[in-house]
Length: 142
Image (cartoon, rainbow, N blue to C red; front, side, top):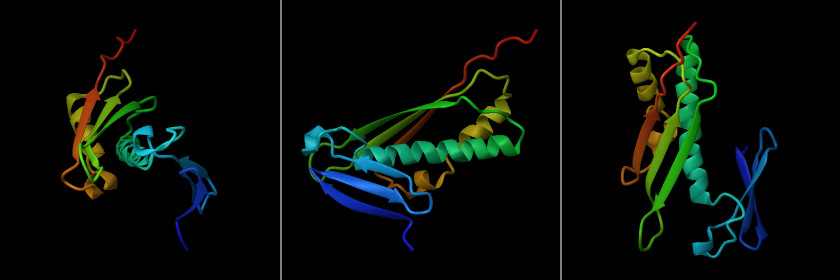
């Protein structure tokens, strides 16, 4: 059985269905590729997959070691290469970590954990992947 089914709806829209849950999402090309930009483009989904995968691995590591990373936010910047064929050239993922009193060792290990995600290792080496972590100072405890 397929994990995902997709149906072309016309007007450059594709409906993607996760077969196990029934969850649906839609893609449209970016305006520079003749689409409306009203939803994720396929390359946006690739960028989102990298962020979600890295976040999931980081969160799993943290939870397994008694660390709370709830509230972590990501920003992902996707840069396409010039010319043809069109492809992703660079993905920059910025992790905005919560202000908690993590030790230097915990920070280092969580950063390493994020880079072990399957999407990170599945993307072609020509796709530059930059992971940056913003570690704000924890508020002093009273």
